[in-house]
Length: 238
Length: 238
DNA sequence: CGAGTTAAAGTCAATATGACCTTTAGGGGG
DNA sequence: CCCCCTAAAGGTCATATTGACTTTAACTCG
Image (cartoon, rainbow over all chains, first blue to last red; front, side, top):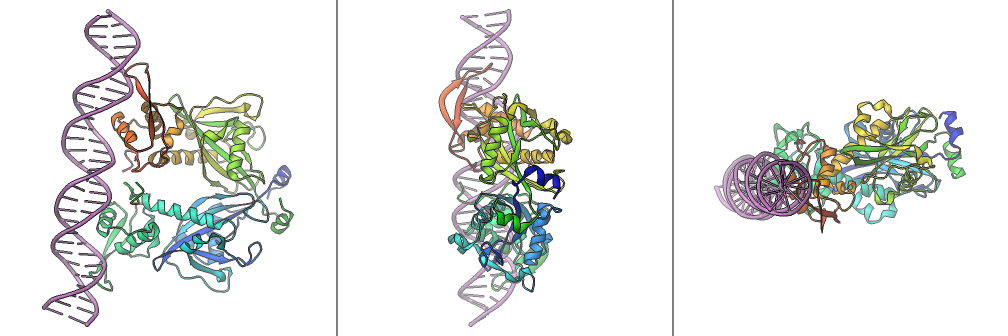
């Protein structure tokens, strides 16, 4: 840091971190990647992966670096967006720490392992975490809650649901993303109509995937469209 | 700041500020409240009002405090929401400074004046600022750009447009908010239908306001609804 | 082959939208 | 006082979208 900065502001400095809410869907549940904290405060507790931002990187770069270091995930293939800043005094017992939360969405990823920092990373179902918020360190339960609501909204207005599906995927796979995140079942026929008539949402590969039972499903890839217009509103919001 | 924090993190500390994008509509133009910077860096340049976050306040409280100190505006009656964090290295020549930008929306407010910090605050049309982005200090042109896009989107999905209108207001007043921010004219009749049939968007006061010319307009107040469902999509987005 | 299952496709009424037209209620000028 | 202008308010209609529902297709298993 520039010396002038330190002189000019005295003690009014803060620790700035990035935290990641990495969501995926596993076995019909929304799951988030957590790490077991190896240091105080909250040593041994579950927390969102994250860490200090370095002075020579952007916030987004810091998020990608922490993603790699703490979870051994290559974030370039994930959907990554800034969720917001959390800086309530008292959210960290060490003093003022402002964290910039990032939201990362991806298909069911290999559970990270190995001798790195990522050794203590694991997937946890969000439903249980939100039911007992004190499980998580800091204000991470609130961050997770905000992230979940953000994702649910994103499904309405964007095509980001496809980011949860390994390609190629069926429309049933895609529908499950909506159903799991919105917590309600959707009419398969209307869902199909909506998705296939939204230009650029999905692209037909021409291939099929045999199902365990029933008619084979056509396989799709993600299309170029990122916005969904008109949006696909959650039933019951009205 | 806690001594432990200072020891534990060494020099990896940042200055954290809040900046405010305060938007209103004046004479058919979107305008933003700017201040002339009184100190380096960018001394004398136009900038968004803002300043350091204190260690004993939340980010939102800091935003409200800066609003009061720098512009003498009582923010409790404004719509205030967090826009996002900006922390690119190099955005401040002093070193790493992370700013949390807040978006504030309100009716045409009295131009702040007097002997306070607010003496150098003034309204500026955003169109010109975005046309020559170097007018603004730091990365404030980008923040302003993001804020404007956020507002345009908010108009689609929320009832926040009413926050721009001093109460009571006419549907013509409200329509002007949309027209100015979206940069296009709307069909008055369809607009009326959409707003009046959206439950809780506006409430009829029973009063009327004579127009300069034409039939008097019914006066409304803001209703309790905050979300607009179904949304009011910008024409041409499709 | 027939039952069971899921994908895919079609039907239809209700709702929302965009474009456009008509009526209403004022003001100002002649 | 009457006519014209203006903007608000209200109505019409074709089209698009949605939700609920039915029908057909394609496969597996027994």
